[in-house]
Image (tube, rainbow, N blue to C red):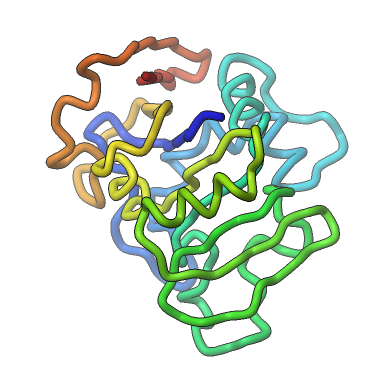
Length: 213
């Protein structure tokens, strides 16, 4: 079992673009940040449910496929689920549609009490108020021998990194400078020390860096 975290960041370390709005809840530069990822065949098949086989199939697609492989449970924040969009609507099932791409139990960290939500494809959202350590203990019970993915958003990712709970961090560094927004690395010093660091450049120009125990 490996605790994994995958993020897309800019050259200046921004993982959460500035200026979110109802039209662009992830920020106005989100599309630029994840352009190479959403162009992959894996993303189109798994998230957009595109059966045509369209999409890129190079290095970016290999990392996109690995993102979904061998995961037994996921942990994410309320924002990644989309809870802030309709916080008081008990019927709101998140912004991932009727076929969320996870297909495993997903723990959503929030102080709002909500009943679990189950989907036919195996995705089950469970809502809980918990520390990173307690959430990880719960995820281990759900995942069995499979990996646990820390899905984000940025606050959740930084909390798990600060607590030294992540075994393998992968960042896809897009060749863009955003200049403002939420940065991944601030105050997370020496994450690379005592770990194996590898890098690979994709056809898109994205640099894939992996830091692993």
